[in-house]
Image (cartoon, rainbow, N blue to C red; front, side, top):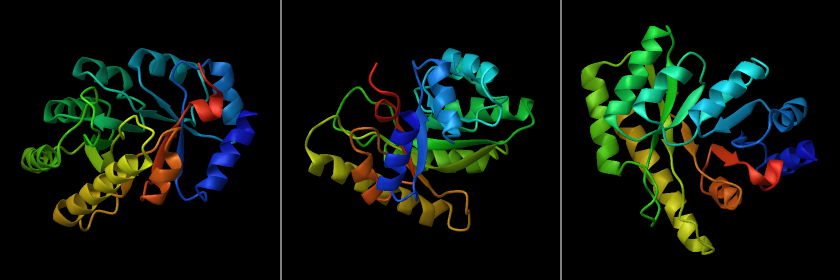
Amino acid sequence: MIGANIEKIQQETGHKVKLIAVSKTKPESLILEAYEAGQRIFGENKVQELVSKYENLPKDIEWHLIGHLQTNKVKYIAPFVSMIHSIDSYKLLEVTNKEAHKNNRIINVLLQIYIAKEETKFGLSEAEAIELIEQKQTANLQNIQICGVMGMATNTENKEIIKNEFLSLKSIHESLKSSFFKNDENFKEISMGMSGDYGIAADCGSTMIRVGSLIFGGR
């Protein structure tokens, strides 16, 4: 069942978008079922749960931290995390760089951009993202690789609103790319789209979708 769900999503997006299976709150048995179906990238939003699953599950899994991250929790995931999607302050970037350095690693990160019409979402404005990138360049943080941007659309049935928000994130990505990352082939990721709107996201240029309930079923 899980394998069939994964295949359906990949067929719908033409296999051109990376599928992150959002495994938060899901038991390890279901993650293993997805793993056995060939899925290797999983997303968690709580550090404690991520660390526990990392310790217990196959070591070739690529773990992505997709939820809000507190600076005092970075040290727990720095030894192994593949990508952090939720960099929303320079302080968090600095701490991630410090912990990556301690572990002799370069950690891939995405800048979380605020694109929704909701007060509850975290993220940077485009101006704040530019300021953060300029600070990083000045400070010479060697153990961080900024690979792109992440955003969450408004939770609404209105597909036009969702589409416009995704297109705005694509536009911000293109603007940052041309201003700061023109010759950096790593700056290529746009993480947008979840279970309810991944089709729209893929059409708007998403390179990574974060899908949980459509793979594993509801809570």
